[in-house]
Length: 341
Ligand SMILES: *[C@@H]1O[C@H](CO)[C@@H](O)[C@H](O)[C@H]1NC(C)=O
Ligand SMILES: *[C@@H]1O[C@H](CO)[C@@H](O)[C@H](O)[C@H]1NC(C)=O
Ligand SMILES: *[C@@H]1O[C@H](CO)[C@@H](O)[C@H](O)[C@H]1NC(C)=O
Ligand SMILES: *[C@@H]1O[C@H](CO)[C@@H](O)[C@H](O)[C@H]1NC(C)=O
Ligand SMILES: *[C@@H]1O[C@H](CO)[C@@H](O)[C@H](O)[C@H]1NC(C)=O
Ligand SMILES: *[C@@H]1O[C@H](CO)[C@@H](O)[C@H](O)[C@H]1NC(C)=O
Ligand SMILES: *[C@@H]1O[C@H](CO)[C@@H](O)[C@H](O)[C@H]1NC(C)=O
Ligand SMILES: *[C@@H]1O[C@H](CO)[C@@H](O)[C@H](O)[C@H]1NC(C)=O
Image 1 (cartoon, rainbow, N blue to C red):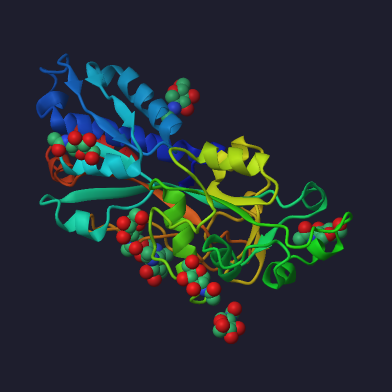
Image 2 (image 1 turned 180 degrees about the horizontal axis):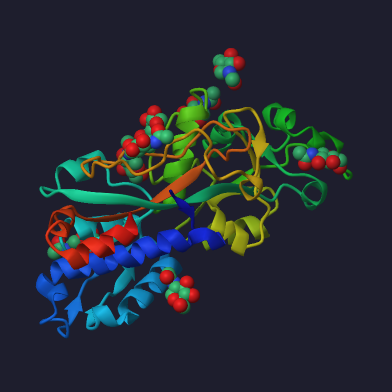
């Protein structure tokens, strides 16, 4: 099962990660587990997305403290999911961790078998700063078609009829909502997993409003505020700009103490990620037993369930599939892998 990274329940996935890293190291070290070469130093370089940074450093720290794996050195570079995947594909990193799957093209042109294991999920949330009065008593409500039209620049004011029809409270504000109160978009120009998940929701649930593709970088309409590098730049802008709206991973929004919007899910209810049911009822998200799956189309977007939140990223670990073949050979490796499964 997948775990949510911001929650306290990430333990199982952390255990999985620690085991997997050790497993990667042992496979690289060849006979490391057989005893005689236990004291050698093995360096296994990995890197990837920043969302799981704390999670990775904790798991790596514990794995390298285990006396059985003395000499194991596991540096992890937080370079972002896209750069991490590219460095893994060109063999700079032995493994990578990221918040979107390898594309089908990268997977097929890697010229070696690749193992991808989903580790955890993370909500992507929309945050806005409509007016102080509004946020005192109300939660912003958005559907995929209306949110897509906003992020595409087709809806430009907070008193647009499509926004008002989802948010009748906007018509009852005291003082009233200023006429033509502008929507100030903010977005990242660098690749980010939140964009990938959000554009997937727009495509799946947007009723053909979204004209763009599913992409890790979304086009920004003219006049939008462009930022780059981290989600905190998005949340800073929203927090300090009346009328602003943007999207970012739930962890960054929570850190910035912003109020997440309620999104219309497939069942027709408005759900905030902080109040959602994260068990994905009726959906089988067990990792398939075949490692040959590309995972390129795996997603947790717009799933059924009355309290299911519709937009989430999936974090995966990428490594060479050859490790699972070696696993069958060494009893030590097998026990480590056994812990994982
Ligand atoms: C690392 O070890 C500490 C102390 O035993 C434990 O509290 C923590 O949960 C462990 N972390 C992981 C990722 O296993
Ligand atoms: C591998 O890819 C990374 C990320 O794109 C890049 O920084 C690095 O220079 C590449 N290394 C080689 C040997 O191509
Ligand atoms: C609309 O306003 C009412 C009265 O203040 C409040 O109880 C309700 O929760 C608000 N609705 C939303 C969606 O925030
Ligand atoms: C919506 O915005 C897109 C992208 O800016 C534009 O191509 C399209 O014509 C707009 N649609 C409408 C109905 O205004
Ligand atoms: C989808 O769009 C069509 C055409 O604009 C509209 O008639 C229909 O009501 C929309 N459906 C939903 C569920 O929004
Ligand atoms: C995704 O975004 C990048 C950067 O803006 C762009 O070059 C690429 O063409 C886009 N891909 C698709 C399928 O639209
Ligand atoms: C879920 O998928 C796994 C792997 O494909 C399969 O083994 C398992 O039986 C499935 N479980 C259910 C309840 O469908
Ligand atoms: C997400 O999953 C759905 C249902 O499994 C699938 O139809 C869709 O193509 C997937 N999206 C992407 C971008 O792969």
